[in-house]
Length: 244
Image (cartoon, rainbow, N blue to C red):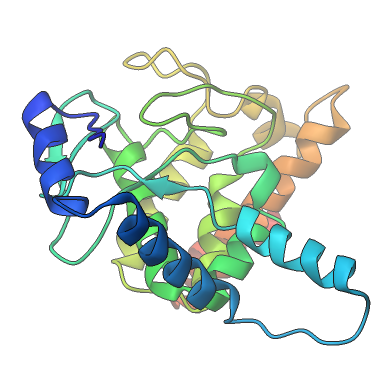
């Protein structure tokens, strides 16, 4: 039996007692099997071959492995500011976001199947950014920046989750933080991280010179911000970012 915590040794002990306790291996295995059976049975497919249906179920399983729960059983978690925070009762803080890879399809699936998890994901992304001054990463590993890949994908992730029904958070506050991040030019002094390399040219010219890929990624992120703003009735922000 193993207890894990990214907060403290006491947290690991409490997680072990709360989540495993005196259960034996078979009990844990059966409970895990029931949980995944319920998840995978949310979508029913027919036709095709057994191998094709098995591939579908495997992909559905893989799509729900990350982001994963980051907080302890008592709701404590270590934030991007390296301090201990607590989630709201009944909610979770999620970590590890392959941002560039998942904004096109996985988050829409999560929002459709599990809007409560999607809402917690948005809240988690916002808290991560807010703890370091509304700076948004691209591919966060646990509670640290990596800056992997280009673009600014978290804005697309949040806009998509909201569109697909994940809305249990203060969306206007989240939108304001997104706008702040999308307008920042240069390296953030506190974190040493640059959310949008080339943003000065992008805002001045409408594109990043010699970098069509990043230009398209920024367009996609700004479109997400615009769509969320429109859904929230913020016409000024909608028009500004659609113009971008």
